Image (cartoon, rainbow, N blue to C red; front, side, top):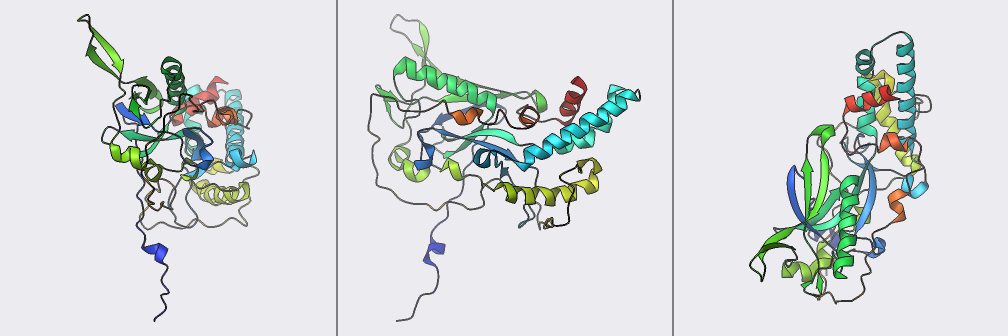
Length: 345
């Protein structure tokens, strides 16, 4: 019998990643239960992501996770801090020379743009389902995260039920949320509200009740194979690996923005070269798609005690980081807003 040399794992179907988007207007989703051993009972995972760097291997821009959560330090934070101090120094010199605020802002435009591009942004990732029955990854900004946690905590107190449960029984049901996005650019705002339906009360008056309508049966039965491991949606690099990526990108940045070169991040003697992408497309997430696996169908058992965890210490573990306020100061970036921030100091 001939020997089969092909890797049979390579023939297994690959799963396409579904990423939900909070588009302008109303976005209806139901947050789903914690999934995987690494969830530790939390329905979300906090990430700090920078989108401003090109992958050294593919030549495409892709998100990189900060090493702050794993090593308590991050070269990107340090770089942004150095850029911010340089901007402050330029401002001080120009102020002394009598330059106007508009002149200073224009002078800092390119540097502000670099800061805006590379500064890590905070996102909170959830497994969520839309009204079309599609399970995917929903990432929300800090303001929406705060409101969502408040609403889920309130729901637990009101119903003594888990708002993320897959079930939709009277004594065990999740609830649908409306993620609301308004404004544009740095004026973008996020809000969250429970979805409520108009109902006719026994007394003939019209009232409102929380939308606790059921999920598709296939999602209930096969959630374990439909959900995503939120701890692996972005690749985590070590401090040194991330610094290598940073220096290679800074090496290119200084060609168009000389101000991007700062002490401590200006030795390019051992910096790698950034590959040139054939298509220039962005890589929206982890390049390794998950394989689809099958699990035994099961109904999620009801428990009277809600074990959902919401108050993670990880939500605040970046508060003492260098340049924290500069890095995570806003949900939406605008280079003139960042330039204006230098003028306010």
